[in-house]
Amino acid sequence: MRISEAIALGRTLIQPLAGVHLTGDQTQGCAWGMVQMAAGRDNMQALHIASNRIFLTLPCGCTGNIIKGGMTLGRSTGREALDIAIVHLFNDHVMTKKDWSMEKLIDWLATVEPADPEEVQAEPVKEVVTDEVYSLP
Image (tube, rainbow, N blue to C red; front, side, top):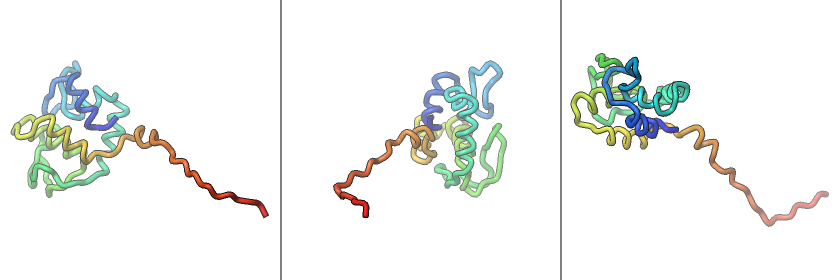
């Protein structure tokens, strides 16, 4: 499952809440909480680790102090790991400023996220067909 797919599904399972991964009763949470609810804890952790290895320019143009995990401020040059970009966009732009929608976050994420490992493994192996005849000496 891709991160964008998990957020899209997860938002139907829990209510969005900035700054909290998941509430104790698991009825509210952030974007990564939505991923956990849709994909499971182990898959969420694997996706989180994979997204931590991808660095990109924040699509919102924010630099300096930006909202990060737990609604805390952190310094940014405008270039962040994808996992932090997701946190920032959800907490600051979707939930606080409301200048992004969940749909915009999901659509943007689908253009930059890593491939689903299961999709990559499921790609068919191309068979090479040739008309050449080989003979042994």
